[in-house]
Structure formats: C-alpha cells, structure tokens
Image 1 (cartoon, rainbow, N blue to C red):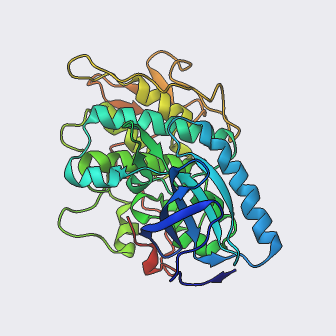
Image 2: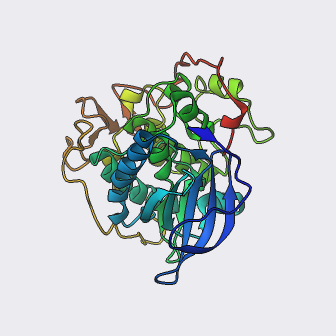
Image 3: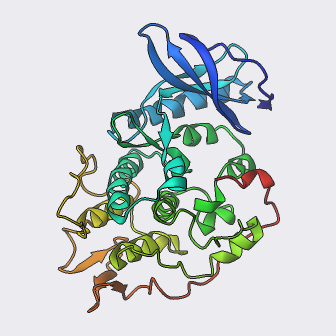
Length: 352
C-alpha cells in the first residue's frame, strides 16, 4: 500500500461533477452525480493506493459485507465500491447534508431526543454485529441527518478500509474522544467498543462536549488517557436512569458493558417524556435473539425490575430513589484507571 496526497479530482466510473465535501488524512469525500439516474451521491476515495491484487480483493470482499448493512433504515446506504484506475479504493454512498456534530455545537439534544437517536443507532449496531460487521468509529460526525430528519449511521467504510490497513494505521484513525480505554492499549476492535462509542456520543450530544472534558480546554492524548480513572459527571437536566445507562455503556471494563441489543431495549424502555409524546420504535427490528458475538438478554426477558447488561446473570436494578444500581458495579463509583500505552500516540489521532 502506498499513500499519495490527492491533488487532482479522481475519475470514478459512472460519476460526474465531483467536488470536495471533506478532506482528511486518509480519505477525501466528494459530492457527485450518479450519471445513469441523475442522483446526488457522496463518494469517499482513499488516499492510499492498494497495489496488490490480494489487498484489492480483500477490500472488495469487506465492502460487500458492509453493503449488507444498507437495508437498515438508520444506516447510510452504500451503493457501490471499487478501485480507481490507479488503485485507490472508493465507496459510493447516500448523500446527507448535515450531522449531529454540527447540531451539538449550536443546540445540544434533549434527553428525549438523545434516547430516540440512541434506540435507532443501537438497533443499527445490533444488526451490524449480528452480521459480523464492526463500525469502529461511532461519533457525532458519523451520525448524519437524512433529508427526512432521521439519524443515519455513516462511515461503515472505516470498518471496510481498516481491514486493508496495517495495525498501527488502524489505530491512527480512531477518534480518542469517543474511544474506549482498551483501544488505547491497542486491543483489537470489538462490539463492546462500538457500544462504548455510541454511549459516549449520546452523552456528548446532550452536554455539547465529550465526557470528562473540561469546559475551558481540550485535553492532550496523555491526559485523556488518565481521565478514564475519573467518574463521568452528570449532565444537568438528564434523568438519572439515562445517565446510569450511559455510564454502564462507558464502563472501563468492556465485559461490563451492555450489548447493542440490550442497550437498544434498555433505551426503548426509558419513559421520561414531557407532554406524553414519544417517537415510535425503529421501523425494523432486525435482531431476534442473541447476535453472533455472544449471549444477550433483552429487558423484557430479564427478571422483573432487573436488566442483565451482559448476559452474565448479574443484574442491575432500580434502587429506592429510581436510579440504577447493580451488584456487579457501582456506575457512580470512581472507576479504576486502565493501563494505557501512550508511547505510540500520534497527533493525527486527535480528531473529533
């Protein structure tokens, strides 16, 4: 694989009128027109060139796996994938004009909105995990807003493109503000890491900043690693049951986090609407039973008043004050700081 800085507009079969939407260290996203049907699309073109046939075949194989996600109502559609004439992989996707990263800068989400977005995106992750696909970079910038106002999970392409990168490069493209502690230890990606990132994202969408970040300054990579030893503060106005659920999803121990299925059902079970309005559940419930990654229990299948986050049989129930408390962990307690390897941090990792 060879990296070439992109200075000219690429030629992508079937597309015309390419103009830059966003440019990053590893890829450039263009707006384009799919000529055959006159549809506006987004096309992501990797700066890296895949020179070997083996890497190209692997990319296309993984792209097909990610394409299976396109049927979900809250996942950006992947229309096509391929290689440019000079070996740069590309993904052609549905075009969305706005993201929740922009929304949270001007108007943080209410608890009701965050819950409803969380239900839909957790459902999308549950479907992906059941199909054996990881997202690897859930964050506000990858939650787009469709022209119908629906949240859309974007950039499953990272999961595809990461498969043909070496290990260190894969680590470079994670977003530390929403990454779990095990990723700082160079652990392999897992469904639990996706759950952590989604809960960290929902927290940030309500607060306007990532968890544990001070209001006055962005932390360095090393100081952020130390922050995993600090408790996650409350967000003013957010009900305690939602805070407890997000803390469970952001547990330092990946084995204590709920699966995406359990997170979806627990969010759906929360009932704190003002004025009696509540959005409908996802229009499609793709996961029936446990995903292929391992066992899980839904809220409805748990003992009365208890939720088994992990399928381990350890319950989390409501205490007298209505908050969640569990025999496996105290979500408000000061969590242990993980051992984090900061020796190989790269400044390019620091992006939101």
